[in-house]
Amino acid sequence: MTTTLITGANKGLGFETARRLIEAGHTVYVGARDAHRGRTAAERLGARFVQLDVTDEDSAKAAAEFVRADAGHLDILVNNAGIVGARKPVGEVTGADMMTTYDTNVFGVVRVTHAFLPLLEASDAPVVVNVSSGLGSLAACADPSRVEFQVTVLDYNSSKTALVMVTSQYAKAFPAIRFNAVDPGYTATDLNGHRGTQTIEEGAEIIVRMASIGADGPTGGFFDRTGPVIW
Image (cartoon, rainbow, N blue to C red):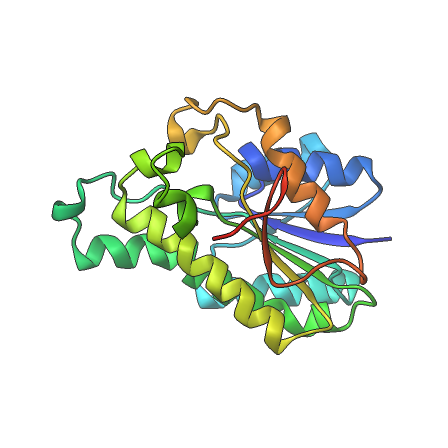
């Protein structure tokens, strides 16, 4: 049985990814900061709930200990939890704003990955999927023909760029683990007030695909629905 943990899985892309992977036969741990929402989501999905606040080191460690005691290893980690940030013009963004956004979108991924590395290394075919964004692509944001060029958001965009580099560094340091970042596309979620042009089902597609690659799959890349992204 494939064991999978998804952070921020009580709604949106995380919830849909959990649903699809459970359908594929995975045992899924729904990671959520809010215990009530997390348990409710897990019950709806037929998953297992683990309380996990990615901004809290002790919470990440406790979640890893819970999964270790329950399953003994982890096959797939999907770092999905993220925040949209301060929603301010570039010139009004402060250092504190940047810290808050990075604390979830970048440092949170590092906290969770660090806590679960021993359990991933105990798997025969470990995979980590980090949910980034096309807004983190340097190439897309510099191309006037792309929609990403029109979105000037200092904290969120740069945090997703940083996450791609974080992913590549883990991939080089741990060649036995398939580490990849993904861009779900402009998906209708709470982060954008459901203004996205894709459905949740469409957005989750690349997350599910990269979570299912196995030991022979790519590593250290950035992927969207069409394939590798030049970031």
